[in-house]
View: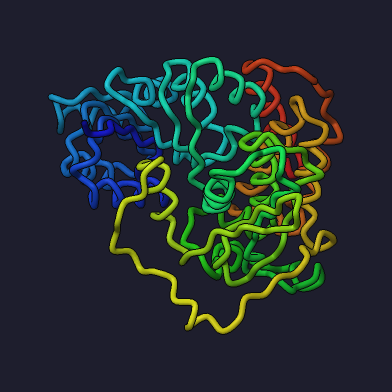
Length: 381
């Protein structure tokens, strides 16, 4: 039996690499659904190759074009379209490769429909971790991490007892500005911030990596994925990105998962779990890696990581607010409306204005994120 897959965000970086994995393992997978954003040309190519049963695109006008091109395929659009793809009756597992808070609702709905989740959209757990994890438990749904760091932790924990974990150690490359100080960052451009030293990623996650907010989001995600307190989640800068993350146990032993910087490996593991399947991807040759280094993150220069810990410990709607403020701040930076150093200032300001809801529902979370984006927008308007 082939595993039947839907990919949300198929035209993005993770989505494209997911399709590469499926292409390489055609005997194991059937692609049921695709969703793309505004990249109509690429989505058309993907539809022609994989012939899914259902597709969704962001705008209604592009949906009409797709319907004309593919009259035999169910075509949807917008948020309802994302949910339709994620919840299609024939889907077994949903790869959520969307960027930002837009991934929350279709992921939540897919879980309610008892679809397993290969999670690459970290904002889903950042915004509503408690709700998502409880819903997954209630519906006996597996949430399999796709992020290289969380996949590493997931693999290190396999076969080990959770109560014997002392701490989780998330590794971070440090981004393109590692080693620089605030005075060096006052005039950096979006173009420079987008040049990640190790990974090929989308714009949003690349800027988050440059500010260390991406690692902050991963801290919150790890708290929910692995049911561990924030005081047992550490971050260490590892510029070579060979060790993808580590788990330290109570006897002092540390297990690390290592590999080349190839997102197809954790994507494949999430899709084939609990099995491992051969591939021809480039393998790590340690004899050609002369040094692996580690250092503490510079929280004074990159305060977004501290803001994420603060929001996570406060809980409730604060993580959704932090996420919304960050998304809007990143958007403004990419449009040259604020400086790189203003990104954490915007987030901190919005968090300071928020009235916390401690035990929110999904509607509260969505409203909090919307409010945060509007508040962040006011920073320069």
